[in-house]
Length: 389
Image (tube, rainbow, N blue to C red; front, side, top):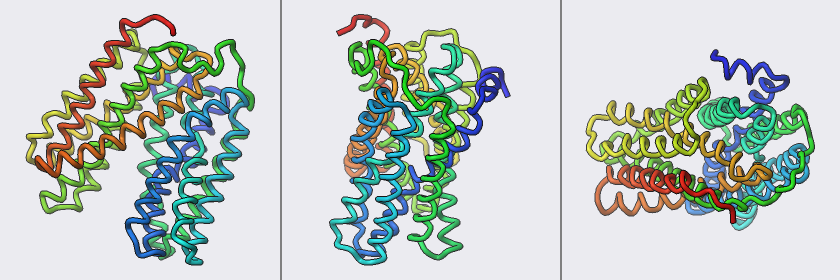
């Protein structure tokens, strides 16, 4: 273990918070998958199930900045407790409604509430750990946040699938994972060092520095890259008549993300944060571009893994810029970043689907590359704009 991580994990409470944060985020990926299985089984309609997933994502995207603002003003513990109650109650009600055959419209409403109540674990970890470490330790702190999140998103669906195999019930499996994640969220909130935020003169002025808007645009384009890749991977596997390869290719992104987050936070960086973000977005665009021409699936796997290794460092670097652009309102700013990434993912997925239909199964990766390169171009603005609005 390298020095930055040793220092971070040597701080009181951080190892426990990392483990609890991992458990608390299991529903982030399990909830959408579980809703599809539960709702489709209850209604016989994949369209209704898809609507529920869309409602869940929309609820989470809208709620993140609000949750962040509340964290800045009232502290993390109250927000996490309230969000956990909302999230768990809505998902448990959705499971109960599926068993009881409630009206179809209730499922979308409950999914929206569940998304709005998705506990802001990664936002809280960035906020809490960021203010406990010195500037040079924040790269490791934010890298660990994304490492924990990536692990939860990788392991959660695997555990969920195993529970379905054992219990033979997707409803029961979703209920168990939901309740366990809710309990972990409450325990996580109690493990935080402080329950109240430390106010500053600039609290709440997220966009006082206009560069924050540019940063959100860069993050939106980074989300667009992810969204396009999420469409491109299964489309490519289906076009090659090996849809089962989708899981292996998606795993390459997750494994690369874990490795990238771990490596990026393991050293101290001397280059300017804005320069790093520009370099990472440029590297991501260049790395993904050859996927338009790669034929062999092992080659695809390797390129996707390298792309994953760049994505989490880019997210970490964006978080470091939040400390500079919104020093008194980090939690709300982190919430806006989550919203921007989600919106970008939706736009990127939609555009990649249209392009893939018209020009072939490999072209969504051209969308992914172009989105990253456009983000790199916008990142140059961050290097030269210094004024405040």
